[in-house]
Image (cartoon, rainbow, N blue to C red; front, side, top):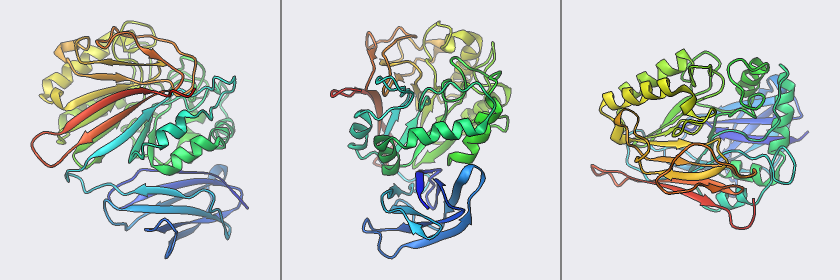
Length: 382
């Protein structure tokens, strides 16, 4: 019996969700407040679900507290895959946050997955949380078979540097085109149903914004709202999000009360190219106008991926409906450099490989919260 991969996500002030691919038929998650794994509490045992995935929600935890966890497969403990996650602070409590952001890891070594040094570099920051903006790899699956997606995920998480990063901190993940379907895929992808099924079987995630196959989601860390939109599974010639996800997002903008929203719009927001929000300019303007009309535009900071380069705009070129909000464009972790979108106020994009980002929230409880968006690049190779 062995543990093939371990993922942690959907963290709240009192819980987190572990999903592990194991070879046995049942397993447990053991949780401790100490790094030496002493006095662990067992959750389970639970029978594995579809595709050999053990799914256990760890509950009843203390807020804002670090925990260590590992998985037991049918009585055999795998101490080689020990994970760490702090629970979130109580919603509304002022807390600083360091969050990593990345996407697009094809592997410049010619593979469709990556084990580049950039994953170790990101892990070295000790971030509290991560956001993966999609393209975990580039399988370009065009067949409606969930097993193909699970096989691809196995390849990704067998990469030691990636698995080590994902064990070091919980993360949110929303697919892009190459890990959802073929290149430039949308709601008509032939593998859409399989992608949705495999995602829901494999990944811990927050409640989805819509029940239409899209996987956009949101959570709150202290006084910061974090939102990731899905620009693939609902995408048509006139919409990036699809009707249900768009309606849910607009309601979220209307209703949210946190002083800050970190918003991932996934694909490049600024520009006119076909695989940017410029392809659905009317919808982009509609959403921008909704944000402006909400009176909350100054709370929102934009993130985007998909492009294989880092870029930053201070709002000078994000002028839709008078939005004028900062945009950090991030990518790719390990992929051949390319650029689309823009222009950007910071100048020419810094192309990958080895491109990633950091979001630093400084919140001491006062009337203002500091938000710093950083585009960074690995200096020792992809």
